Amino acid sequence: MIYPTAQDFLNAPHKQVLLFGMSGLGKTTLSNLVRSAGWFHYSVDYRIGTRYMGEFISDNFKREAMKVPLLRELLMSDSVYIASNITFDNLAPLSTYLGKPGAADRGGLPFAEYQRRQAQHARAEVAAMLDTTRFIARAKDIYGYDNFICDTSGSICEVVEADTPSDPVMRELSDHLLLVWIKGSEAHREELCRRFARAPKPMYYRPDFLMQVWGEFLALEGKGPDEVDPDAFLRFGYGRLLESRQPRYAAMARWGVTVTAEDVAMVKTPSDFDGLIATALERRP
Image (cartoon, rainbow, N blue to C red; front, side, top):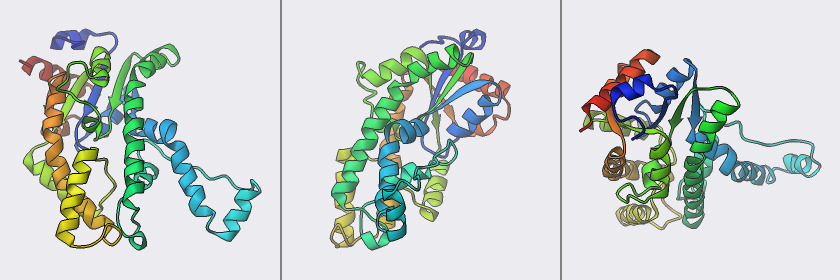
């Protein structure tokens, strides 16, 4: 690791940290906290939604707008401009584009189109993760930032093989950043599931796991792929997705350190954050 001991981290002139774990456990909250203290905040989801999937997202908006005669006329004459307004705190354009499979009259996508967008997201996520090193250099060289935090997508564990020592993404990240897993408890898992049930949102699935869960859901519902309720599928798959990701996160954690979501909730200042990471390094076997 780039910081073998807690003192190495605390004394480092350039702190470089990557946070990973399920969405909703504090990655972005911590990133915003240290950003206020002069850290450069690199959001992987923002990079995905702007650099790598920005055209897909805006083209989808335009495709829908072309169905409205007035907007079609304005678009064809270059009288209006349509683009997503994605931000660090509002990633809705990205999740909306990723979509959900099922009945079209309930906002669903044909399953083949859903798979196509899932594959686009996987490629984009890998590319955005590999951009991290370049952004570390940019943050220092252009803007003068000494410290750097990478706020990853919850699906990072789906696009790497952390049990493989030669995995190119894991090697690149661990060579330049301290990887920190924010680990949730069973109580956190239950709360995430309750929160998701109230407002289900599109998620990324590994292709083989997606086919497994989709097949189980269709068998349970007894309906065709174009007849099911898309939100019902999202709710059905979410708990299984959380469970399937835990061992993948744990494998990633062997490249770095682990903190608990309870510990993260206690962090109120940038100094608290330094202490959180230092303690995790002291605990590491």
